[in-house]
Length: 200
Image (cartoon, rainbow, N blue to C red; front, side, top):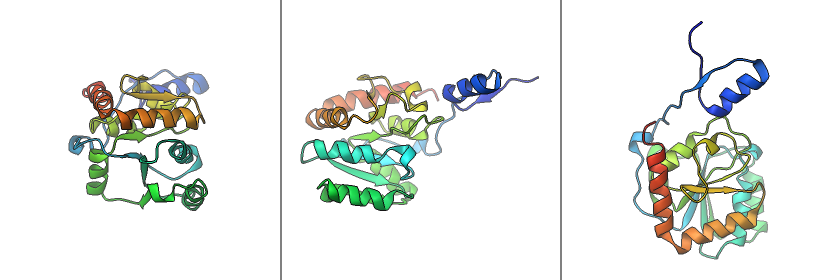
């Protein structure tokens, strides 16, 4: 029998746990990796992907409501949760600080990565998660959660991002404010992230 590969250690561990099959994790780069770059550290946190409950993008809105007034968020993606997220932003009083960009072109996505302060990617037990690698390729720190699965194979707390307790909007808000108040920290974390995925 030939060698078996999975797209991440998280998927490998599931295969072993549920099927008793051993495999090796073979990470592959995201499609846009070679085009991603950093242009600076702006005033917004970027969320990329489906607007779906399992992606927990609502928690970014709750954190934003607790962060300083200058903090903003841009959501690049569509999905079944979009209308409820728009209502939540209004209910939290932050509608003017949130952009729902919808489906975006590759060029717009590259620009968003280039200009954001950091990237929010905190799904529930993600298989792999290209978003983490895209963020690091653009030199941006990642905010994730301790049960997010695949992103935890790359994110190191306070080294290239932040690993937050699930559902703790206050902790997320404090991290957002730290990055806003100290863009040099965002730069350091992002550079560490770039180095962490440089060989993939």
